[in-house]
Image (cartoon, rainbow, N blue to C red):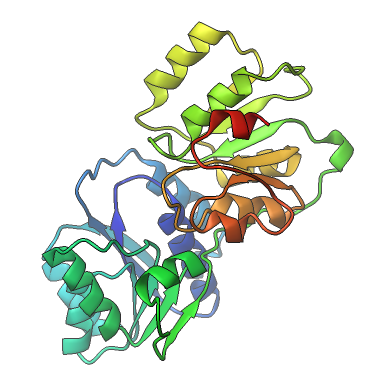
Length: 307
C-alpha cells in the first residue's frame, strides 16, 4: 500500500490498518509506505495505533507487516512495487501508479478526496493516474461525482472506507451527551460546535460534550473554554481504539458538523455501527454517512446546529 501522510493518525491511516489486519489474517504480507506530503509533522499517533493493532495479532501475522515513511521520488517505492503482487494506492498518487504500470503490476486505487477543478499540473497528474489504475473505489457518491460526473468508468465503484469499527452494546437509557471525534483544524466544525454548545441551557452532567483528538486549534479551544466556563466540555485528547469505541458506545449523539466539503465522514459510520445516532452538517459525503435518520444542520451555521 502507498498512502499520503501528514504524520498523524486519521481516516486513511485507520483504513490502511483495518485492511492490513484483514489481509494478514489471510496469510498475505503487507507493506505500508507512507509518503510524506507538505506539512508532514509526525506526533507518534500512527506508531501508537500500529502498535495497538499488532499487539492484538498472532505473532506470525504481525511478523508479516512492515510500514515506513518515504520521501517523494523514493527508490524504496520502486523496489517495493517491483516485488509486490498487488499495489493498492490511497488517493491518486501519480508516482506510485505510473511505476506500477511500468512494472506490469496490477494497481488499484482508493480515492478519498473530491476532485478540484482548477487547472494545474498536479490536478492533471491526478486525473491521469486515476485513469491508469486497474480499479478505482471512491469513498462516497459525493467524491465519485466530482471525478466521474457524466459517465462512470468501467472498473469504478463506490466503497466507503472503514476502520476497526466499534462493537458491543450500551443501553440507550445510560448514554450521555455529545461526542466529537476528529482533527482540531479549521472547517471541521469544532469552533461552530463549541459556540452552539455554549448557547444551550442544558445540564452539563446529563449533556456533556466530549472532544476527542487534537490539532492546531487547541490553543483557541482552551482560550474559548476559559472565557465561557463550560463545565460540560471534556477534552479527551488522542485516545486508543478501545477508548474511542467505548466513548462512541456511551454517547447519546455523535456530532460531526464540518463546513469543508467533507469527502466522507467516518465517525458517523462508527457511531451507527453501535446504534448511536448522529447530528451532521449537510456537507459533502456526510449526507450519505449520517444516514436517513440523522439530524442535519446547515454547514457553518451556529444557530442551526444549536437548534
